[in-house]
Image (cartoon, rainbow, N blue to C red; front, side, top):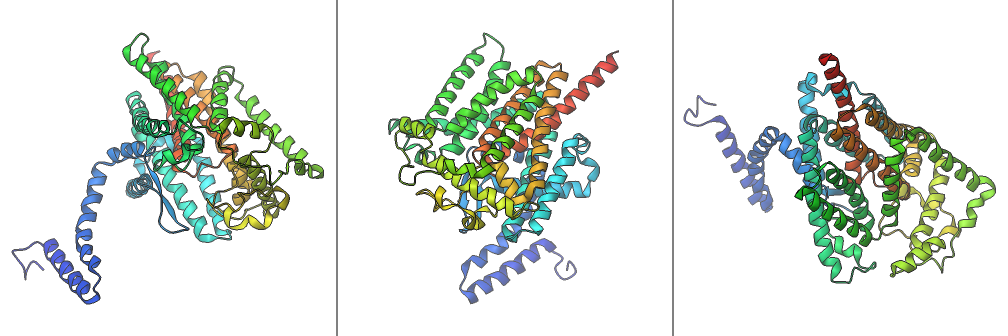
Length: 486
């Protein structure tokens, strides 16, 4: 090529040819968008090279985007969280390519951690259930999404959040964007006197509804509380953080989410549980309570006692009436939960081993519903799922999938308790407690919702797993430092 065109670079010649070919094709087909292809061919390598050089900045950008991103429907069946999920994809692709060429650079903290072993089993089992899925395409998309959540939030934090300054930066990149959303929501919501009926429309475009908003808010309140706790006493910064904490709690009140309020109470209780080393007892009691109540409900079909009155289960625009209806079991959202839980339990009984496959509940739950539990919102226009992530995991991935996920979740909690009592660092102990509180709150929220697959809560869940690995490494560092000093 250089022999015929000595004055030109090969790349410039190829670019010119591409521009000529696609321009001619655009004129012939009268599809002028083809003329953009040559520019894309030139631009994409530049963008990839820039992204590789600034991968860490891309990671911090992802943290900033989490509270700010919105749901974007590409087709009726395919949606994406924009733009944070695009950044997740980019980070995942670059990380996997890098480790493919340089496997020795894979972080040893992750490789040697027992959580990583269970994480591989979790992903492998999802792949197996996807192979048996009734709807293979949504199942494969679910599997891929699981990977591009795990890499940025579990593996990469071990590289860039593995220090006090890194953890402080992580807190800032999460809290400041969330503060922006809270302020915007406050001003919007105030125009309608903070009414319960209007809260959802004031959250656009950042959150789908008040439940998602309150769920992320209550988790980040734990981060804000940790920052306030670690801040030097009598400092001006501590006073400002206390004011921010009060405003965050006020925002949580006006979010009108009963699940988030319950999660906050559970989070506070977690502090006492870990300090008293009672996490194993706490987990066993929770598991036994669920099993006993489930057995009682199934025996002689006792669950029919909770069948709602179709005409009396309504959505109340006044929050006090909403709470009263909740206590009286006449609230439409709780009644609809029973409707879907019954359907989910019957689906699980039908396919207990591999389940129906990931992302299959909405497409197949109708034949398993019971008419007596139907409400006036059972047409499910939002295409939402069973409203219990543990049940959703069981019916889509089988009992084995549920056991694997619960093992991951409970192992993290027990490990955090152990780490908390082994660490000597005041800072890292506070961070450990915060991670444990967030994990418990996420568990409570997902017992009445299903948000692990969402960018707002799923990101925090997997980030907590990455933090467990980092904090475990800090225990080893302290031990090594103690041995070397002796």
